[in-house]
Image (cartoon, rainbow, N blue to C red; front, side, top):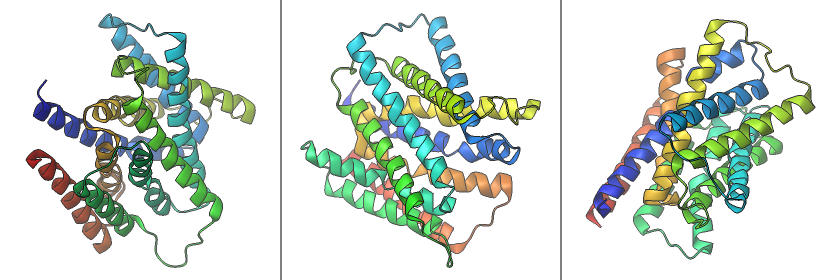
Length: 296
């Protein structure tokens, strides 16, 4: 595949990853509103996604074979991705979702800084895009006055961003798993995540099927497993390998943008002036990065 084709495919995969992950509220909000505990929702989204992806791999006769050394790193990736989900949902207990979204979107900065320590230096265009997208997310999701900034919520949201950053960098930089397909990598990460959430539920004493008693809940769980989980993880892995973790992180801005669009169209949430301004800044920043990359 030519360099330009790899770059365009990587940008497309990065945008798809952001859009699909941003669909979390579409399926997750009805489940939470219906009384499904967070732990149950996370377990089923990972478990169903792993079953669907594993079945797809069997149909295509793709290999599941990995060495023990490779599997140990895949366990780490699964822990990091699961930790990102848990810490984000736990942060909602202490701070508003809008503020949590803003803090989680620190991950492009984390990625860029960690890459500096690895002696990989983003261009000034990428740094400008990072600054603009972070600023845009702050504008569109920062809460109004009277909000209590609890330190525990802010730390948890920042840990979510850091976990996600480490996931992206390991997928891109590790030579040990470089030859493993995106399908196999994602499958094992999902299996590890599902196992962790099941264990967390058993320790916590949360009934696994609590709140899941209607066909609509089952459909929402399947939707949650397919779009913001399986598709998102596959395209994240693909984009990270094709264009690197820093540019993939910038394209993650489509997560909050999609989430806001879902909230507006599906849940009648209001569109304010700061949301429109924030969206415009984010889209302009991404377009600038894509155009400057194609000219390079």
